[in-house]
Image (cartoon, rainbow, N blue to C red; front, side, top):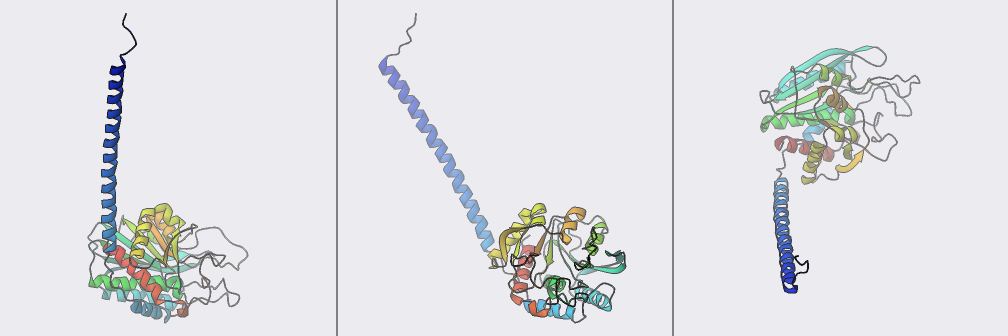
Length: 345
């Protein structure tokens, strides 16, 4: 019978070998982790270097501000008015002058009370033959009612911020794209009849998709058959003083990584005080329909605040939404961020 007892010296030797193997394995694992960590740090440093060298693009807030003034000079751009037609012609003329391929969609849509109103979407394309595309859009119409005001609620507002500011940034973007052509395809879409939803002062509130009617039409009838883009950016209320743009809920649902990249671009340009990393509630805006109908992952750059019950700026849907609320600093922050996103897409 073989004994189960080992000689003490043999036991010690085996134990020493086992300990040595354990130490060797630990050293190997440590070295492996150290190498991985160094590579990750190198990758992070490379990413940071790439971001830190983000070229500051040319954008003129003076020009954008002038584009707002020129829109306001037509009066409130309410669907069905002379101001609507004149402003649409203005967009088409400007965009063609800036070298874009321009398509104008003209149709009629039905608003909340069943009335049919004209709708004019203007689409400007750069590098239309390029398959990889980025879409930027904004609504340009004026709300027919100042339903957040205490008086004169039935009269239309000038909509300097809630409409004209986004369109102005798109126009200045077009002017810059003519001077420095991007390697990707760009579509700038001026959307109409966004803000003709039922006024809040009416007692019988109807249920339905009565906002963003021009957007809903474009999503179902794109300017190019089977149109798509890799990502989309909606600009809405992007010109007011002290604006803050947050991680809006619908945007984070459909395009979170793209949204974070745009915010990172803004931060690297020095605009972190405008583009804040804060999650805010979902809102139904043009991007909701672009995400759900056109299936283009689209984010909303929109001024949000905790200082009001609505979560929108105090001038929202009031007669205070005029040229006095506009800030060139805000326009500069948004415009530079848009161009940096285009040229580094």
